[in-house]
Image (cartoon, rainbow, N blue to C red; front, side):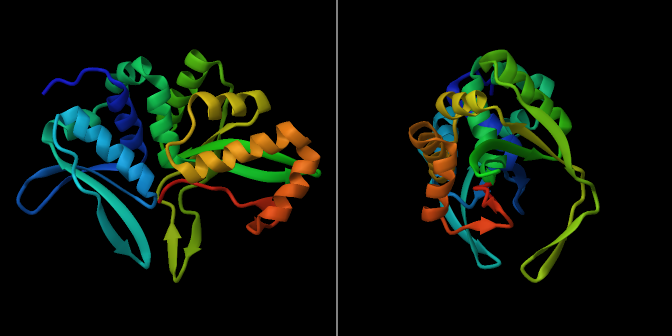
Length: 243
């Protein structure tokens, strides 16, 4: 099956590179799958894959793991799975054809609208985390070439780092990198032109921008504190990647 560039395909590529998988079941059937915590993200991916394959939209599967609810989109398609597993060089023309949709997919999967108070001012940054520096390089290039958005990338955690997830200890298997969009006009342009398909992430970013525009960043910090209770160590909770 040959795949032509489209908005749906670019969104699916970005989403898949962030949170997707290509799996084989016990009957040797191949499936393209996305299992995430946000139903709106799963539904957007599910609808887009149905359009690409020209099939009736599958039902979202609800699963549970360690007390958490996941929403799963799964389609049987070896050809799509092999295509999505292609090299970044092979996928890049599809991302370039519809860059906003590609970026919306990967930022919804692995990105967050990070809010914090710095010297009494409310700040918003867009952050994308991933273990593949080549993929982050592609994202950086697309942001610059298509939207003139500046970003920077840094090593966030080294392989072998550990942290607690409930009663379990998680060990990082690969170096973890992060791409940041921090300049005020770049953040605003990202939210307006690209954004997140996940409503909770988009809402947080839009509300922070609105507060800063209407009452100024110092008063916005006061208002944010007044209406939010998710403060952690002087920085506001990052509304982060779908898990």
